[in-house]
Image (tube, rainbow, N blue to C red):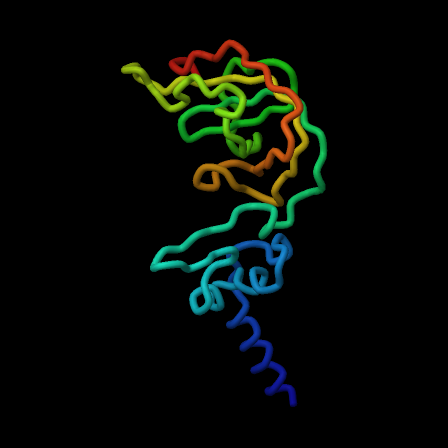
Amino acid sequence: MRIALVITMCLVIAIFWPWLGNPFNYMHLKDSVRTSIPIALIFGEPCATYKDGTIEYDISPACYRFEKPKRFKGIWLYEFEGSTFLEGTSVPRTRPSYHDAPWLMYDPATIDPKPDYNDAKGGSCYPIHAFEVDFIGQRSPDGQGHIGLFGSEIWVRKMLSAKPLPAPNCESY
């Protein structure tokens, strides 16, 4: 009896361990189970859909368990491959740590469609656009954003106000 129990536990551990992420961070059981690396190798990663030979990942609240919507106010720094949100009211003097600040999932063209937000204009760096924002949003359970560098991610559900601010100098950031 003891040998059967040990064999069963070893099989369970071999099937479900190691994990790609916290299985409790997903909305659906199928994605929670697919956080197990052996299962992900067979059935695919959590929140992944296979269409026409490509993999599409759903990073939205439809797949992940985000926090309940709440009101956020602060500074949004948008730049090429960056979208940092800082709760507060002033643009920081130095670049905030990626891990300490969430990625803000929002398109700046909805605030002001005129600028080319990714144009370096021949300079040595891409411009940083700063906005004072007030919105209703939902925070992700763990790291997201560009290549997963950010400590969390906030999805804007409703933008209440957005005011462009003077941008920090990308050379000194």
